[in-house]
Image (cartoon, rainbow, N blue to C red):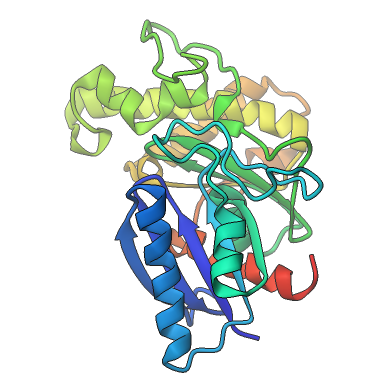
Length: 296
């Protein structure tokens, strides 16, 4: 089998052909209006197939929210997204119709969670959570290579968090204000300091790391209690702040308060950096295409 993958992001789309992170050929282009962007997607795959690439199915790992219940009329569509012009867009259906191929769609973070579980930082455990911390915060949970869904996919970036000491920032989530994303995303840090976290130095950098670590630990506490994962994998731009992971681990132990007291949760290997980097999303999309070929 050979697969097509689409990582659909708010600022860029990544299209690829292959079977995994070690053999995928990709092309990136900016996210524009839906019509123009999806035309670029269709042209990429049409061109590849016209020039000899075999593609048996396509996986889409997309920004959301998404309707993922197959029995609903809006299945495969983006729902109430803050991305202008994209609410209601039929991502899965329009691609399937144009390419005449099976298409499976899920969130970008679910795709990354599946990819890290197959090839990356959580490949040696059965259950894991992947968080991305950048322009927004999102998360996906994988158990035995399958994503967790319910009425909707998990929305981990919107859990409530306790405020860090001395932090009076109102939050910048348009829906909740001071949820995890509203307090610890890249834009939230930039609003506080007047510059992106990656551009900070000295006392400002130290304070930014403290805030990111505290809020992530507060969110992870909820995930630990609800999902009981064996590992937490964190990617995205803010995960690359120097020294942030030791601070997250210390803050998490504080937030857990000794309960349930599992030694595994105190180890360095419980909260770890993502391993696949920029290939996590597109690799996850290829796994979704694999699922289409398995009939799921």
